[in-house]
Every structure is written in structure tokens, then in C-alpha cells.
Image (tube, rainbow, N blue to C red; front, side):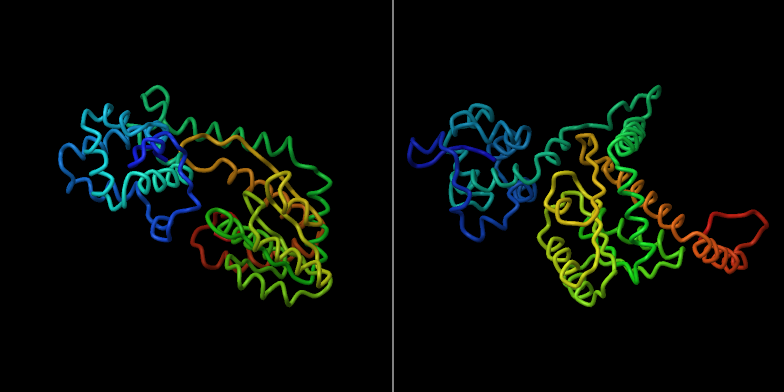
Length: 319
């Protein structure tokens, strides 16, 4: 993320070769290192840290002299700062800072905010979150193919069993949600968020079994391996994922969406709302394909849940 200085003047404005760093450089989060060592730095070195952290993107493009000017210190102080935060020198620091910016620019940008957007009393800060959710639902409605949703429901309704796979972040919790939505209809379904367990589970597929994969990017190689295994054992595959992704092109049915995301790391991902809607739609489609069988299972669940809840009000199913 940053270009500062090197013993050779030619290196001051040269782009760092990230691939040439050692193992320690690859594993160190230099942003966290700067913040963690900040109190132990000299006042002049703290000025360098402040200059870099205030605008990491600008520091990436800056020379050693420019960093020194911005921090109102000498160029040797910049070099000492780099060593004080655990780097071998300016070039090593530059490489680590570059990597941190590539990985987390969104989160670093959020650090600059002093409060949520639109935080005045007339416009609550959550208005932007509601707006993003509303927009996501409108976008997914416009992007989805109704026939594909119906086809997915038909496959699930006929399946001997379904396995829902989602790995990491929201995808894992969405896989669990899909299981909750489908089991109520009597669909034999399980959710998995471990790549090895997913691979082993799909290895036991029988013809007609269905693999449902949830992935925001559609690029994870472990998920592609699961699709290949499902196809090998004559199972079917459904993807809830991004359009034009490897996963969307590999599965039998692809339910794809790409929605606008608000550029703030502290707010929920709008795509999560879109994915939840797709899950609800394929669950409803499955229920309609199952018809009376689904209704009977729902009746049994509600009958046995009523006895656990006091009062006469008809609560939502499963509460």
C-alpha cells in the first residue's frame, strides 16, 4: 500500500513486487502492527504513522520525501518508523502496506468516518440501510428468471435428499436458513459449511439427489469440486450466486443476482437480502410442487408447536 524510500533512489517511485516477499511479510497485518505499536513510537514516528493511516491510498503512491513532508519529519525518521513497526526497511514496509490496502481498502476507508451517514434527527442513520434492502429486493426481482425458480423447486421436490452448502460469512448462515425453510415441507435436507464435510457428503450422492450451493462470488474452488462430484454421481446442482461466475455456468440451474452495495463496511451486505429472497422463493416453489404433502407436514409441525406456547394467538410457524 505504500511507497516510501529505499537505499537506491530508483526504488523510491518503483512499484513493489509483492510476490517476492518472504513468508513473514505475507502473514503480517501491517495496519494492525502500526496501531498496536503506536504508543511505543517516538513523537516523530507517531507523526509518520498518523500521516500514513490518515490516507493509506495516498501513502501507497507517495515517495519517502512526500511522506516525510506530510508528517513534517525528516526522511531518515520515515526509515526509522518502518523498522520500529517490525519491517526490515522501507521496501519491506511498502510491500506489506500495499498488501493491506489491496485486502482491506473498504475497511480502512470506513475508519475515517466519525459517525453513520445521515445521522441527524430528521434522517435516521438506518434510512440508508432500509434503502439498500429495498433496492436489493427490487433488483433481485428484476434479475431472476421465474422459470428457473420453478425448475429449482421441482428438482428439490423430487429429490431423494438435498445438501445445502455455504462457506464463510453470510453464505454459511444462509445455508442453515435454507435447511430451515425446506425441512418443514418434509424435504430430507442438511446444511454444510465445512469444505471437507461437503465433499464427503456429496460423495455419497445417489441419482436425483440435489446439491444447493450458496456463494456470493461463485469462484470458490471447493464449491466447484462439489458440483463436479454431484454431476459424477448423477445428482443435480442449483447455485444461488453471482452472474457470469464459474459456479453459475457449472450448475444445472443458476439463480443469479448482483445488487448495489453501499460502500460502508459497518453496514449489512445488501446482497444478503437478495439471497434470502431467492431462498424464500425456491422454498415456496418447492412447497407448491409438493402440495398436500407439504401442507400436512406444516400442519404437524404447527400442531406440536402450539402445545409449547402459552396463549391463543396463532404465532408464526416454528415460533
